[in-house]
Amino acid sequence: MDAYRAEKDVSRAEKVKLVAVEKHAQNYFKAQDAMRARMPSIVSGFTPMMCADMASSVPLEGEASISEMLAAIHASTPMNPEVKLMIKTAEPYRYEIVTSRSGSYVKQPSGLYSYLSRNRLVDLPSEWERDTVAAIFEGAELTVPHGRRGAFIDTREPCAWGLVRHEGKVAGIVLLRASVNSAYTLNDSDD
Image (cartoon, rainbow, N blue to C red; front, side):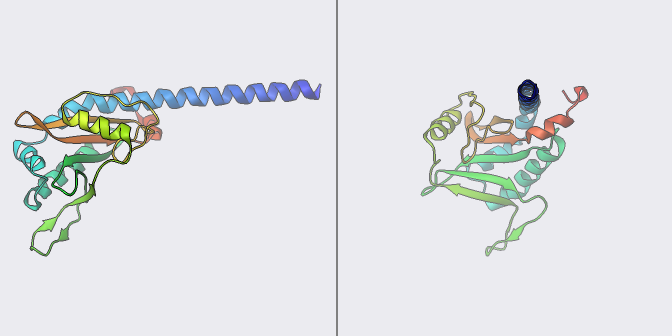
């Protein structure tokens, strides 16, 4: 009798776990689809001047407008995703991951203010991400399987990205990444 009850408890626990995994997957894809649906309007919101600034590694003079845009994207997108921008930059670096300082700034020795946090990279640490980002900067529309983690792309949580172009070339990649738990707050009116 006790063995039967124990077996039934294990079976019930496995079913509960399976339901939780299915719910997690549903919320992951719901959140990812919601961000992907918004991406065309997000990308088109960057002004020609912002795109030109991205193409020239965002000089300090252009930081304020890009910082404001990244903060606005965060605040006005369902689930308030993390917003990052990747741009190519000058040697000895290859890429730069840019995020908004969200209303704060740092005065530089030049007297200008810096409104962005910048993470410069000599390269990307994994081969799959190096190849993916290189292809995206060439204009490829790619997807990355769930569970990949890189310096910029991290699909362990729902994410979506769009290409910001200047003079026909990709000047930047804007990336949204939300917590899968935030998808629980999405309702049908957000779609």
